[in-house]
Length: 557
Image (cartoon, one colour):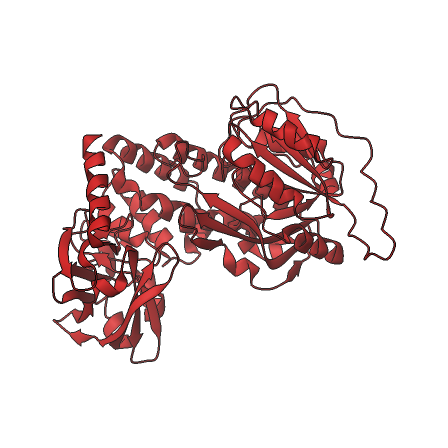
């Protein structure tokens, strides 16, 4: 979702809501137009019309679409004006000064709304068909001040989709108060929700003004702090379109500068303070837990990509933030990967063990050797950081452990072999009895799977189990393939894992391989940002030449 800059220059709202349209004779009565969709944008002429049309196409429940242009310089305002000339439900509000963020233009939209309900849409995203009807029906049936549905992240240009916080949206649920379900704090998005406009105004709930990154963290905290009745629906109500190759990354994706982490810490701190000041202790503690499980892991996976200056600054600022955690914060789910990550950061004044932390931050987590113990036999992070205890892992079943599997793939002309090695983890793996591993390659573009196989795991030493799996590169075909594994144990439990790429510095060797199917194919095993093994395959002479030309362009630049 693309952030938008803005400043307080708004049209005053109409004094009264738009009247309901008169029903046509013999026609089904149309739903009352009760919703305003606020579309914000800045210099996004290429996409804003698609966003606006997706809001207008929701049907008669949408009384108005308020397009707030944050003083664009690319002609977005003129494009919106042309659209508005032919669409009476579209109202364009152009801000006089660019605000630098998303909060101010959304506040402009709240002020301009004349309807009982309001929702938000960013200029580079879209509302799927039926989104407004699903949210409005739940809101009116339950009397909820806030109604929330499923958001999906769509990676472009591939089109692959990932649901956001899917466990919240498995069934229709009504909560008399947010404290009944602290996991609500995990969904900090403001765009997949319908708000009763009067509720926002009665409680003075606003977004932070100006250039404030992660403004939705603060807005969501203010909403939950007011104790609304909340309805959850399993319907898809928002498509968050992620364009990682865009010239201008959205603020939430532009994590390459330490200022981004600083802004996230500021937003998390403010959100916690808002909840705690409102007496919402359970939600405040859930916000701190969410920081460890989400923010810490996401940024730790990328630390190895940053320079030494960034790493030191990230480490120091994270330590300063974590110093405010109390014993109860640490006691919650102490064996979770995010808490172990945080304890390593707190135990060391300087960045350390970044490669190992990256693996622990992966999803699912992988805890790589060495598996150190104290003189008393207690499991610890390492011999030189014995104060970071891994004892909480002892209470976890194998299916919940951060198990480590190494993987090595060497593309060959005849039989490419995938070699897997499962590591012991303080006796817990042997206790569960590893028997087999299911292997599958998943296409990153569309999540289709190929190359499925199940092979036995056999002891290969005192503390490891191994398996060898043939890989038919020609059958996989062109694309990027992620390796997915499921470990099966004698006690009937399973554990889905990814595999640590041996030689996982991102420079695993690319090989051209003769193929009876394609003539030739180019295969490159590589390590993802989280250290997992993945594979790129290009088939045929044209596919190989495309890869070579791309490589040459990168070298020249």
